[in-house]
Image 1 (cartoon, rainbow, N blue to C red):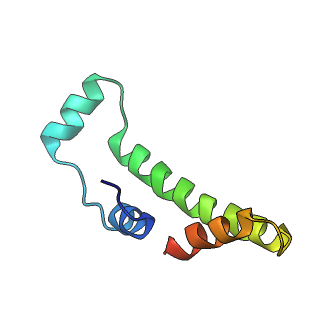
Image 2 (image 1 turned 180 degrees about the vertical axis):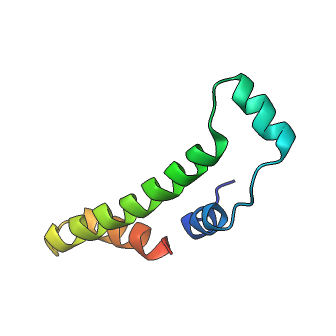
Length: 76
């Protein structure tokens, strides 16, 4: 089963603050949960920007254009 990229990005944008227990457990492992969530959203938006540039530079006869457009259209 797969999750649409629109759902992934929407979920990243609306992620709530981790609980104190999550922060404590992740901190013990050296993980910055809030920072990682922010970085994931940043990278998702960066992916959208990169795909936009790729689509602009891709020849209309290139079979990859349809795939790139489908991925880009699924991003919020």
